[in-house]
Length: 269
Image (cartoon, rainbow, N blue to C red; front, top):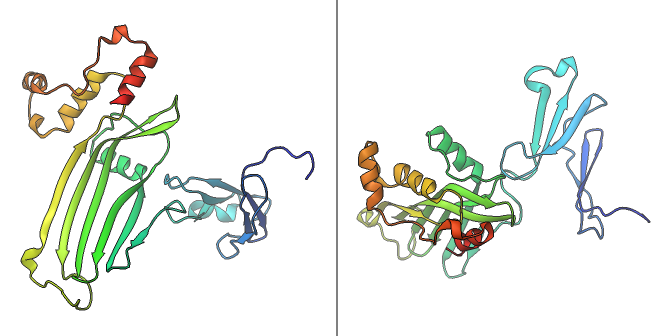
């Protein structure tokens, strides 16, 4: 249309019990409609449909709500998950055409945050919105029937709002498992000796995310709740333990640095 404003959003058009999605091609055109005829409940003037991140997974759901008395109770809200808890266009599988296949599974950062919150673990830094994370990778050797699995868990995500950048996680846990002869069928060179299986190897890695406020407070939180050496220590014992640790960050006197200099120095670490 002539004289139309800049419009960079997709369009969802509802008609009866049919919803049609028109994808926006960078403001140049709209794609062919994608019909959601069998997924959307019927609606009328008393029905409200909104597109929100209902599951906290950084994906969009169509949420249907009604004010009719007949729809009161559990039926007052219904939703359709347009992308089943995973963003589209993510790499999910790699095949090298030489007998090795690797599958990648994802989960939102909100899942790890809620798991920690339920366990009584508070994140030192937080994210303002969900991030898609690789939850596990499964590598399969079809020649030897070997399955190598890596599972991850993330803590203390940090996002710097001034530059609008995600700066990573303060701590990442990783479990590595190696098993043989777990696939259906028999491979040509299959190893059937169960003694070759290895128990999960648990690795914890800490990272400097560039968080530049309250250095000592962040280091104390890590030392108190993250490092094994501080388990069961009272306050005086913890102070001795904390003094024995190498400093996470060694910077000039912060009073000699401007806020921008302190931020850039922290990011460089």
